[in-house]
Every structure is written in C-alpha cells, then in structure tokens.
Image 1: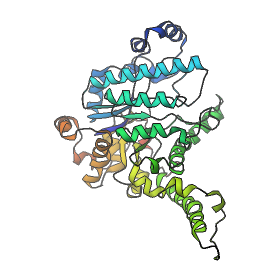
Image 2: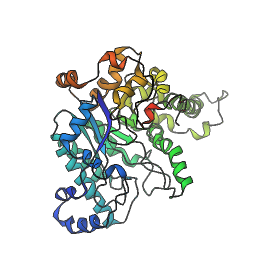
Image 3: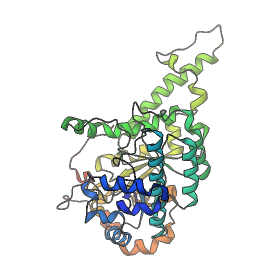
Image 4: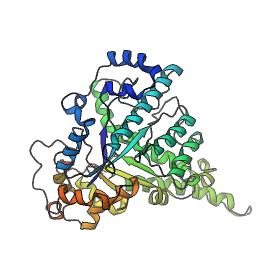
Length: 412
C-alpha cells in the first residue's frame, strides 16, 4: 500500500533553522504571535507530522509502506494554512516566499530520514513565475519526488488565472524534469467568512473550486504546448471525473469543432454553426486534443479514501489513473483503519485492479521502487484475502468519509 495523500510539516519553531538568518528576527515575532487554530496540529497528535519514527510505526501499523507527503503545518509568515494565490505587498511576499522555501528544505530533510518511502511535495507562490521555476529546479535536485503543490487561484485573486500563458515557464520546467503538478483540494476557494452558513457553503463548494484547475489547463492549451506535463488532482473525490470529462468534451465539440469546420469550409458553402461557436475562435489552435484524450495521456487522481459508490466508475476514470490515499494524519483520514477502508471500497475486485489503485499507479507517477518495498510490504501490508472480504460494519470510532454507508453523492 502506497498512500498518495498524506500530510506532514515541521513543528513551528523548527522552521527557524531553515530560514536565512536575515529573517530570524521577523520569524521570532511572527511565531510569538501565531495562534494555532487546528486541533490536529496540537500536541500530542501533532507530533506525527514531524516525528519520523512514530510516523513510520503508525503507517506500518496501518499497512502502508510509502507515502506522498503534502504540507500540513503552517509555514513561516503565513496567517493560516491556506496557500491561496493571494498577492501581499512586496515585503510580506518576500517573507512568505522565504517561509515556503524553509518548508521545502525541511521536507527534503524529512524525506531523507526514510529513503525510498516518502515522495515529498514542495510549495511555490504564483506571484513570481521566475522564482517558482527556480524553486522547482532546486527542489527536484534536492530529491523531492512528490512534485509541486500548485496554489489555488480563487476568483478575484490578484494573479492571473491558471489558463494564462504567463505560467508557461512553470509548466515547461515541470514537463522537462518530469515533476508532477499536484492540485490538492481545499486551496482554491474564495474567502467566505466565519459564519455557520459560510462554513457549510465552503464544504459544498470547495471541491468544485479545486476541480477548476483541470479545465483551466485544458482549455488554456498547457498540455498541448507541454505534452510531458502531468497533473494530479488530489483529495477532491473521483466520482465527478467521468461526468465532467463528458461535459468538457461537449463544450470542446461545440466550441472547437464547430469553429474549425466553419473556418475550413469553402466560401460558397453553408458553414455549420453552433450557438457556442462564436466563443471558440482560436481554441482549436491553442488547445489541441479533446479533454478525454488529454486526461488519458496527462492526468491522474489522488483518490483519497475512494468510496464504494465511486468504484463502479473506475474504468471510466481509468484504472491506471487512480491512486488511493489515507489522508494521514487528518481526522477524516482512514488511519488506523485503512485495511477496513480498502475492504469497504475494493472487496470483490480483481487483485490486479486493487494492486494498481493502492500501489503501482502511485509508484509509476511518483517514482517509488516497488521491488525495494516488497520485503516491508510482505511484513506489514494487508493480505489479498483480507481486502477481498467485504466489511459488514464500520470499525468502532471510525470517522472517515470512507465508511459513509449508502452514499450516492457525486461530488462536483
């Protein structure tokens, strides 16, 4: 089992050595005033974010031998864990950029404590594309194989939308180096305020705002200009993908197909038109293949705790696209019941299909060496016969949505 969605980060004060000394005084002031709002970042549970031996032991207890590690603790100079694409003033931007680089340096050291078992992701900001490109190169050289965490660009953000060609140097370096571009759920929503209704609206809308990266890059032509670019959509569900791809293909046909036919039709013939064709000028040249074709070639899904109602869609999503994740150490994650979560979703499926979704797909995307993990997997991983046994009832105390009974919700 390889979890394609786990989270980690340094204890707050442990980021200090990873900052340049010129930032230490400002860091001390920021750290003294920072109030942690997150229960899972408070002791003693918080230690599983940075205590490498404890983390390895708990993951092995859960049957997991390797992980893709996303950020969790708050990097220096940020007001919250949100890494939206907001653009503060020059001084604050420089501090936040230094804070993200400190986190990236820490992440490289953390992954080095468990060679071959952690694919660490790294963070950037979009307000300085040249600096982001340089950080991609630096982090790739430092051994962070999990790829870049693409910040969300909510409506009204002071940076260009993700379809803008201003980001082409970023896509180019990721394609050149084989660096996955990860877009994690929860980072692309606009600020809604603290009211109870706002929190409910956030829960309903947050995955949709995260999905937007897919059609922005598709219609923006990023995959045509950079065929080696790989996009991973993580912790956003997976059941929405077939329907959204069908919708995007519909608009591709209506916008691109009709506009192309109209442009190439002889002058003395009736030009086929659609109601949308007037919006499709230039898309054929910039976008290229259909959304389904791009998905099949360039995209993957970090389907954290894939739920039973999503499993029948696996062939439409693509068996080679799905990467299961436990979301460790979050409260909504499947630890310490990951085997039971697999039974809930995958019992009765062919062994090869389960093996792909819980291990080999992630190994291919993030560069894990499966033969090197075999001995440990044989010792701690669940048996095929265990996963094949349907689960009668959720484990006592399990809070993960993986165990939601009778759910037919398709998250869009």
